[in-house]
Length: 261
View 1: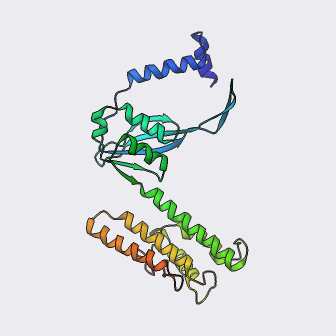
View 2: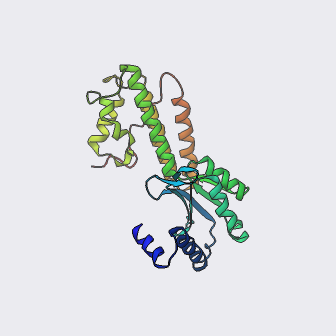
View 3: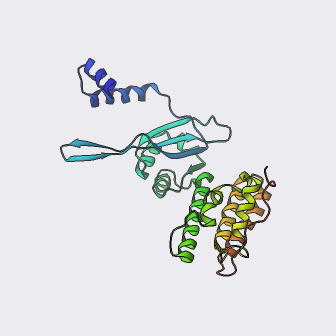
């Protein structure tokens, strides 16, 4: 920041005035975003939270920014735009600032599970398809696995998990993709799901939840339409079975692609 203030002082103006001049110049120099059929929108944290003074008192400076990226299959994956904030209003404002041709060319918008982003997209691009990227879907599934693990442990033991508990020691294995587990890790995880030798998962709820998560990963990893339909049916079947109170669905006993040494 000291360098920025030095530049402003060199021209005899305040930093906000110098910054506004820089933004205006960049708007003239930078080219218009190239049209794309698939637009990606995500949040980016630029820095830590800061507090600034104003006539109204202390104000919280938002460290978040929203980025717009070309995510078409044949595109360069380049950054198309960047605006402060992470609200539906900033998404709507950026999209409305683009040309009608740019907006008309968008067929699909990929976002994280953000309701404000979705509302901003629907306001600026009525009828466009909205998809959630698979990284965030798998992250939500892992959150579900962790929530079930914690609930099962508290229900069974009346406390949080510790190093004495098999399921607690397996907590990271539960979040790792099955195809990334070594043979010993796979065997250790499967032993934790075996209700005949361990009481860590007496109802099979944790194994069922893990099975749903892994089938979601398999579904999201497919590209051929026929295989996608099969994986989708398998995923729905697992979810329906896992919803039964007893017995819960059992996790798959064979890893995709076989054990990795």
